[in-house]
Amino acid sequence: MILKKADNIYSEIEFYPVKKDGEKYYVELHSNIANGFPSPAEDFAGKRISLDEKFLSKPEATFIGKAKGMSNYPYIMPGDYLVIRSDLEAKDGDLAIVYLAGEGFSAKKIDLQKNCLTPLNKEFPEIPIGTDDVVETRGVVKTIFRDISSLNF
Image (tube, rainbow, N blue to C red; front, side, top):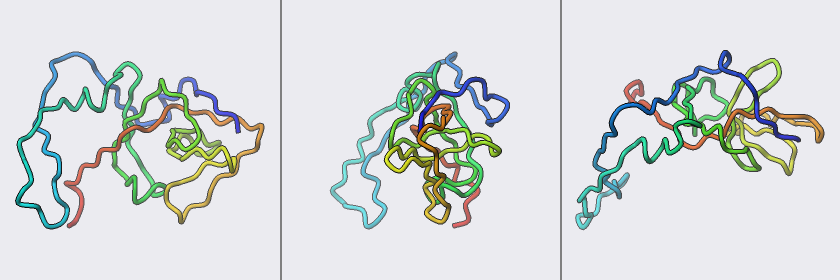
């Protein structure tokens, strides 16, 4: 499998550009939020972080895509936002945005040992790629955001 950066794909991905204008906002970060029984000894003195500094460190090479489909469930769900770095070369083991003929762009794990693209959902089949076939990549997925307002819990 040969990995190649894709050219203009803006008509095929739901694209959310990252804008650099405006001021930065800082929010408090509370680490050690328990998902079980909380420890009474936890220190909740929050640090301050800027989400754009943390997740959008290279805005000129970053775009956000909106996920659809179930091929990467439960890690990525329909409606999740994927922060994608287009300046990074996709490599073995990366979750990359790749072009699939007849399907368009999709997030798949690169597996150079087995020459395939692997969905994170084990119920979906691997996509075999010939040794000399070219796989166009648009970038590497670095972060996933989920809006939980639509979840029924």
